[in-house]
Image (tube, rainbow over all chains, first blue to last red; front, side):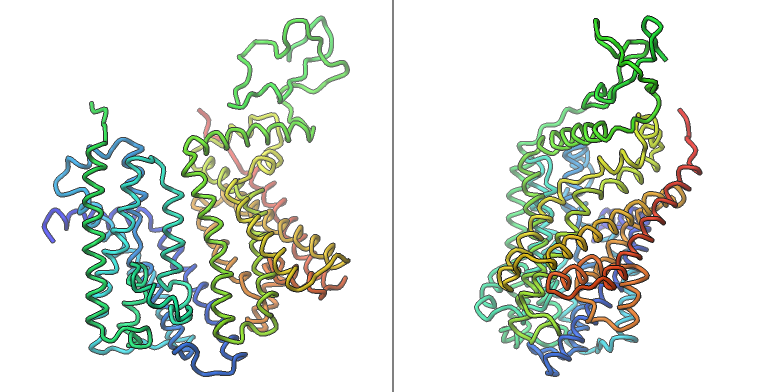
Length: 268
Length: 312
């Protein structure tokens, strides 16, 4: 990370402080989601009469959901919204003239915003899960690989959002595309329910798509449930994740060249 | 006040406000040449019109503006509608996965739970389609200091906001809800009968509750600067309504039925359509909803009294 990138991250933290009220709202709202999830699955487990469903006991499922919420906070990217605003406000060219690449600048600014939001919002969720709902977050060697996977998950979500943002150079308004992206990623990444609950025929299809690598794979590495999801080893899952990062990066760079080439600015 | 030939003052018709909200220029007669003033009319142009038709006309003008604005980017508009429908279909998909791998939610078969989910989506969609624009408009205009423009209109502010507080994004949500309810009603062989009338009544109560909450949030915008927080908190509270009451503990069930009657958002109407309703049940839900509506009206009145314009 260069000095320019560190400066962008610092700017992101300052931008995040402007949205501190949103962070406070997350502080209050996220525990509600966890509470509802716990009560729902507690009743389902009780009614089904089994201690383990789809490879998850209730405390493990609660841990999965907490990790999913935390990952959602960390990997979330609004770069598509920022880029849409750049294009519509006519600021895209001015931002291209700043030091560093357009993509890198947006990435490090977002990292600053995410760092602040996650640090504040994560604490109440983790405390509630540990104290009230019996969740478990053991420390083990797999956590290091999980962190590596988390880093790539951040890049994946950013690159997917960046690709959506680039379409703003042609479409001008991409709010609809952003919402579709959000819905698709939320569901197919295992954000609402673990992928182990999906039908057996979907499991190999899911491995060919990038969504599983945004949430399900980092969590599975940490919870050591990769084998149950059809991965023989963590290294294979990491390699597939890295392949998607490279593929999306190349696609983003190719689309970026075309987007910048067709952009016209009025200038002053 | 303008008079013509010493007759009664000319009534200022709200229909003269064109789609862009422009009033006729100062001093200009609102009547075209040759038109006679309305006989017996004593209502000055500055007094809020009480005709329901005038509010309907304002609503239509606002709808035309919204559509024109959205259709400027047609592809984006239709994609937004598709995205809303997709997001609403995620819950039934998750329900399908749950029922395929577990015994499901106690007391609810799959079709019954889809009826429940469809009812939640229908009521949320109706509330959003009809009234969600109210807090948006009020919070933004209070923050920007432009709420006076609503006070200066020849309408009662709350009535005007109620008629123009719609959001087109609520329409796909409403339609998805209706489709889910229709599908599940077919699966469960639910025919016509008093339970359908009870369902419609409870759905109306659910929408009334949403309306009351939006008014409360809007009223508090005059007292609390960052009242977007209240809107976000309401959105998160709605998550309790996404699942049947019987999954929660007894204390929460009571709180969600009588103190903050979120149960009206899905549980009670769905149960009514399945035949489980009574007069006592109706009253136990209607009274808290009515209390919220009264509270909303009271808070709005207090907010209007406390509001002072920044001028300019």
